[in-house]
Amino acid sequence: MDIVRSVGEALLNTLGSLAPFAPLLFLCIVAEKFWAKYPVSNRTIVINLVYVVCAMALAHGLVLPWLFKLNAFVPQDVWNLQIHAALTWRDVLLWMGYLVLYDFLYYWFHRLQHVVPWLWRYHFVHHSEENISAAAFARHHWLEEVWRYTFMTVPLLVIAGNPQVPFAVISVIVTFAILMHWNTPLGFGPLERIFITPRYHRIHHSIEERHINKNFGAFLQLWDWLFGTRYVPQRDEFPATGVRGYSDRHFLQHILPVPILKKD
Ligand SMILES: [Zn+2]
Ligand SMILES: [Zn+2]
Image 1 (tube, helix red, strand yellow):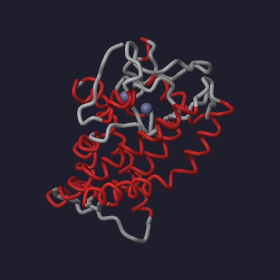
Image 2 (image 1 turned 180 degrees about the horizontal axis):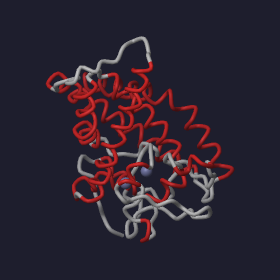
Image 3 (image 1 turned 90 degrees about the vertical axis):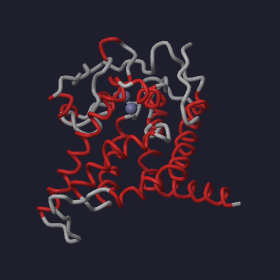
């Protein structure tokens, strides 16, 4: 019965953590029904959302409680920067700094995911979607939380201290994750040159040779630009997505602790 209760709690925690993002996700999914360049089927949307909830429930139930316990062993706020409850300009700048720092850490973590075979095995779950859309915004393997904690949360705790900081920063990143996977050729004007937009991130999911290992960023294009992986799409450049040589039909096997990576 304990297992049933903890699974139920993990599911409730998952739905609770997704709830603030539901309106934006819903709007993007509805908009895709009218304006997606490649129509997204209801089946794809449902499968992706079910997978996201299952994977997050497993992460909430089996992974995150153990990771949160590790927080006690991490030296925190080593430079005594401290964020205050009353937001001053200093605090706002600090929050923005943490966001940029997280983005920098994510950029390198994401690059590693594409070159280290065991990291790629897990990241493949995200890339195997054949028609990337908003519903796949959090289609990540549940054990990815372990690598994310190690590569991004721990450094942020060491510098920022307050465990609220990773949460707040991740909320901004999740909002961007929904928007960047939005299946729309819509342009965002001058923002297209600064932030990660749907057309920009679609290049990262492209199956075309010239797009491979481009556009790793999650928030700003800055890191791609600095480290030579930036590819700004042409106005009408909206490639097919997925992983060449692999199909998505092994989807349920992605839920295994070690996902199966099987060629066509
Ligand atoms: Zn990737
Ligand atoms: Zn993506």
